[in-house]
Length: 157
Image (cartoon, rainbow, N blue to C red):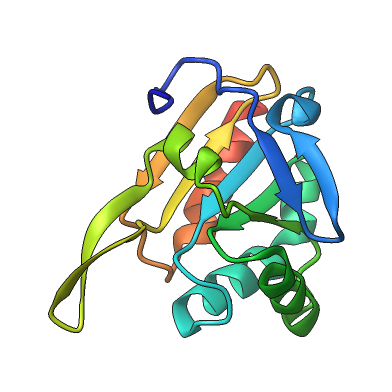
């Protein structure tokens, strides 16, 4: 599957969500969606990013925006991560990498001197019609959520 492109509709991928729920990307049409990918649940950077989105949830909700976090972790790991951190949004367990592939976020990374396949921290804003409007790749966590919120606000103007 080809990666999504700015200005194009996102594919209608099936999502395995925390709480043992299933949805499709199309189920979120009618309101903006922030989809952020992180490398691994319960690691420092990923925890901080989730906490930053959680802290701003009221501002995103005022924009009628839904937030979803996604990684290749198991559903159990995602459920534990969400519960432990108290995230007010669902997490996606993308074990088969279908969602990761659709957004082209799997990259070769250096870890302790070895090349490994992993998720490049990335965020995508999808508009109410299901079209990809903004993307950030190689995200640095600090200050990122404010930038995403500004992009969502711009969509709603």
